[in-house]
Image 1 (tube, rainbow, N blue to C red):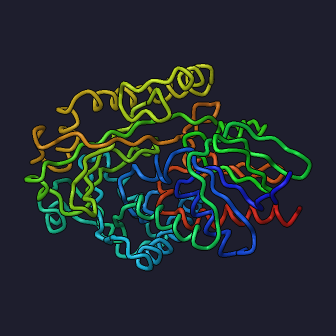
Image 2: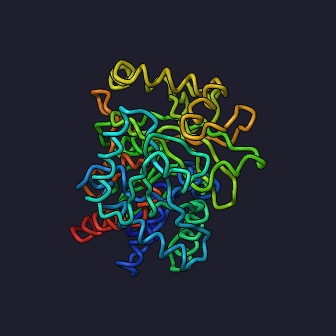
Image 3: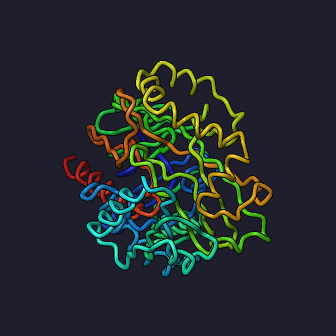
Length: 404
C-alpha cells in the first residue's frame, strides 16, 4: 500500500468526531489518527449552527445515555472552556408553564432533574417568575441554574488545534466517496485522496446513515433533516430577556419548542421551530435536493412519521411562514414581544434518526461492525455531552484495535 495506514480514521469533523479524536489521543497517544471532514472547515453544520446552550440534563429519561452523558459532559466541557479561555456563562434558565395542562409535565421535569443529579432546582409560583425574568409570565416555572451558554464553533476550533498539536491529522475538503476493505485495512476513498486505516469511526451527522451504507452496512434508521429557524430580538428589545426562557416541551416530541436564548455575544435568539427540510443542508426553506427528497420518499418510516406527527408538523410550518405566529408563540412566555421586534437569524438543520415505524429516536444510537463504529444519532444535548460521548466512542474504537 505504500504509506503506513492510520490506526483510526474518523469521518466527520463536528464536535463528536473531534471529541472522539481527542479522547483517543488521551487514552492511546501512540496511535496515529486522522479526521476527515467534507467541508473546508470543522463544525460547518450542526456543531457550528446551534443555540450555544450548555444543557443541564433536565429533560432526559433517567438512566438513558443522554441523561448520563449530558451531566458528565457538562462538567468536562466547563473544564475545557476554562482551560482554553472560551467565553461561557452558567446563567441558568426558566422553563415556564403557561397552561394548567403543562403543570404535571413541569413537575415531572423537576423529578427527572433531581434523579439526574441537578442541583439548585427551584419551583417558582407565578408571582416569583419576575424575580428571575422580569418580563416572563406563566402559571409556574422551574429555575434551572446549571444551564449555560457558550460558542460551540469556538469549542470545535479549540479541539482541532489540540488534536493537530498532539500529532493528529485533520484533513478538510475530504468528502467520503466510498469505503472498501483490502486485507486487514479499510480504505476510505475521499475527494482529497484515499486514506488507509485499521479502524473506522463514522461521526458524519447529517450523512451518518449514508456513510454507514458506504461501509457496506444496513443501518436500521434513516436521517431525516429538520430545519430549525431562528429570529433574533432587535438590539433595543434585548432587555426583555435576561438569560434563557423555555416553554414546557411536548413529551411526545424530541424538540423543545421555540424559546428565547441569550448568546455569549449579547444577542438574543428566538426559536428554533422544527420544520421538515427537503435537503440535508437545507438552511433555507427553498433549499431542495432531489436525492434527499427521493431517499425520504422511498423510506417507509418517513410516511409513518408524517402520519404520526402530521399535526405537529403543520404547526411548525405555520411558524416557518408566519412571523406573526412565531411572535404569538413567544408571547406565551414573554407577552411584551412584538412581531416587529423580530428579525431573521441564521438557521440550523438537525440530523434526526427515524426508524421504520416512524419513531423519532430520542437517544444517542451507535452501530458497530467489524473494525467500525458509527454514531447514527446524536441529537441535543450532543454538543454539551460531546466530550463524554467522544470517550465512549473512542473506547469502542480502541476495543476494535485491540482485537486486531
